[in-house]
Length: 96
Image 1 (cartoon, helix red, strand yellow):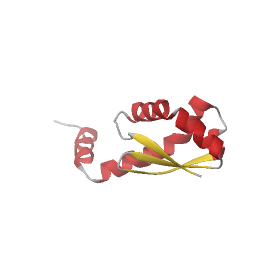
Image 2 (cartoon, rainbow, N blue to C red):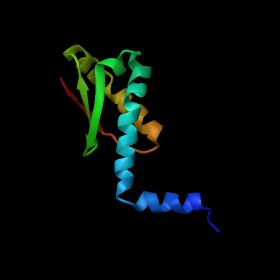
Image 3 (cartoon, rainbow, N blue to C red):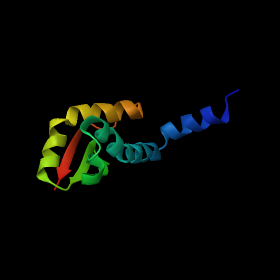
Image 4 (tube, rainbow, N blue to C red):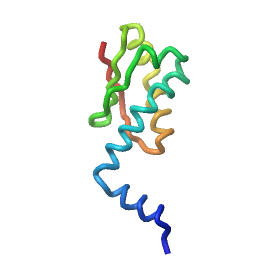
């Protein structure tokens, strides 16, 4: 007999809303993950906005911060995907 947690987990993984939940978790985790890689100021100077087609869009207060994020993009994407346990993000896009 399956537990309620296992049953709900299986249903959730098949649900279309599962991708939206994963995307929301990735957006929420961005500041913490990027801050761990680049230092604590990232959360004050950037804001993860949304994920569309595997691309995480991030707003930056300066072009310098956007370049710094772009330089470490692979590391940030890998850390976010590892934290989520799934390959949700393939790349990042930066708005200034």
